Image (tube, rainbow, N blue to C red):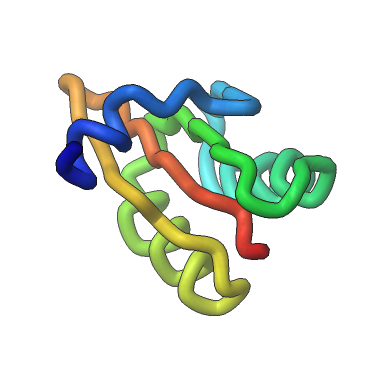
Amino acid sequence: MTKEKALSQDKPDRSVDTSGTCCPEPLKQAHRAIKAMQPGGLLELICTDIGSRMDIPAWCQRTGHELLRVEEEGKTLRYYVRKRS
């Protein structure tokens, strides 16, 4: 099974919808959600804030969480983040 196929079959352990909010709210909610999750858990973060395009990848890099993919549908961005082990 390819990595992409495996990712598409992963169901998020937690989904957080921050649509309609702007910086720093999406990042704060992502941090709060992932803190409550088990290591290796998958977070789906839904955003409409354009600033999240820079903020979420930078946050992942800084904290050691893995940004698996980003999906874009219109003005909505979905980030899939694996909590570090």
